[in-house]
Amino acid sequence: MTKLKYGETTLPVGDNVTEEEGKASLARLYPELSNATSEVTYEDGEKVIEFKVQSGTKGAGRIIARYNGGDLILPEGTTAEDAKKSLSVVYPELANASIPEGELIDGDIIYNFKVQSGTKGIIA
Image 1 (cartoon, rainbow, N blue to C red):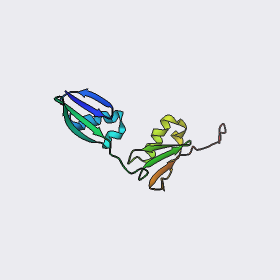
Image 2 (spheres, rainbow, N blue to C red):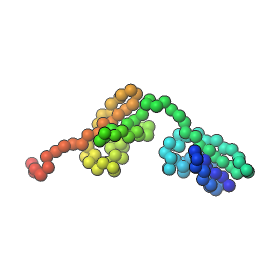
Image 3 (cartoon, rainbow, N blue to C red):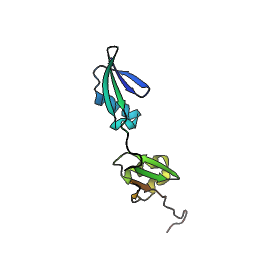
Image 4 (cartoon, rainbow, N blue to C red):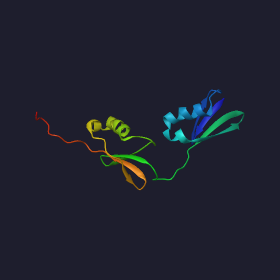
């Protein structure tokens, strides 16, 4: 039997699961594993694939969506349009928001979302 291990979590899987398949599967639950390294060891005759997250430089090159007093750190390569779609699931009022220009602050790209205000009840 093969086991996938990340932190304190150990999951038994089939013997034919590869490292890449295991990583892809666990990354659905733990997105930080998408760029993790893996190491294969054997414990009591069982194959163990252990995943470790790569540490990076905090604050360098992040993509951040800012709205309603909060910051959401987004995966590398996320566009402002992608950020808007993701945020509008939680904040429906962003569905009609304009797409902001990315602002470069301390090496981070920040998309500062603002809701369009309008006049309700008036037909022009």
